[in-house]
Length: 326
Image (cartoon, rainbow, N blue to C red; front, side, top):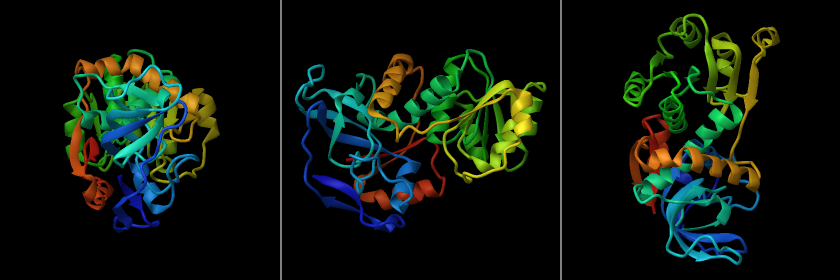
């Protein structure tokens, strides 16, 4: 089969499309003919040698989400069928013609969604739903502050929070991305280049702050996140783009009775990933199926143009998902 390989840690030039053996499904697994696979920042980190795939998944073939159809069933799989369209999470290996995944992670693709949409949904929307609800205990109507709101997970979190009737504030360093997020329902745009987001958040909420903050930035934003947080608020750390180490003003945490929550989806157990996928399927998939939420596809690349796709994402040019066709 054809697969995208990381030949060695490095820049986009280390990526190549090569012929590799087609895997076979074992017990409880399915073989998927992949039609589309989303590109995520975790793939960029894996290419650089900083984010290896979990044990049991291909280390040299990236890809954490897919859309396609079932090509073969492993022993014991009885609730799915060959030819059925599915999409879902993978620990790696999705940027290839064929992928073996546990059957419990495969979700039926609604007829209203294309394979490209299916390949763009799982990582961003399951992560966002899990961060908002399972980790962040989101309640209807709460004010939510989402950093990097123009990113794939940021857009997903914005849409899911708006579907719950929550006012959403969002930050970005791009005025264009803020404007495009406004079209998806963003209530308060905060240009992180022009103003301090904590001051802007307190001003926009009449001094109350945000009940829930979804953070992708990490160290650089920690103290200002606490400043922007409401009493009894929660901060969910999804990524650490600015670094992992920062001084923690414990007095502020205590005074606000704040909860600081870390989350990482890729490294979870199979049971935890299956539970997150089921929760997403129950609460969010119906919204996607009837187009109450629409997945913004920024750009589609053939797998052979993977180096260009990586450069495109590294330059922060995308708003929404970048997807490979396979």
